[in-house]
Length: 156
Ligand code: THU
Image (cartoon, rainbow, N blue to C red; front, side, top):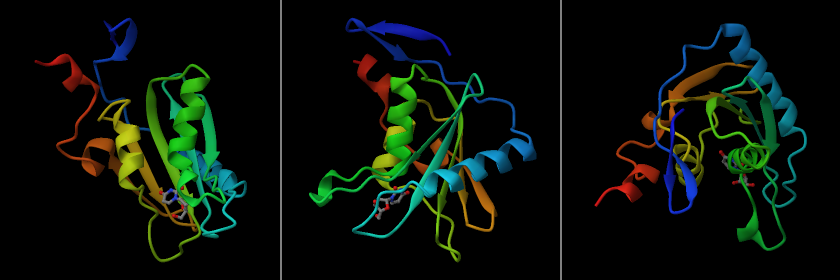
């Protein structure tokens, strides 16, 4: 991914999709998200969510939702895992897998998390899973069409 200088910082600007992941890689990523779900701290909602993020250099970072007695401070699994990855030096992502305990519906990220994903590109994959391992594949662009992103800040 190319980068451009912006206001003294560095901003991602080119966004190319990666070759498709193998079935085995997808299944392993979903499994990692299911394992991460076990760490969920959700005493208020009791709604466990786990996420596993595959970086461009094939690292897997995991995260879960972390709630708070001050309810609005709770953090979703997806935002948590992206913040973890960025703070460990990763900014290019191939895919994220998301897991919850819902048996009858694929877990789907909230609007805020879609925007958080979109910051790091439109053309990477989001795997929405169920506990039995079945999944839907979406791109960030499909989940958040006509989005606003970092490129807009460079336009007049
Ligand atoms: N949650 C996530 O972590 N990710 C999602 O995709 C949907 C919702 C969390 C937030 C909160 O801790 C709990 O699930 C119930 O909304």
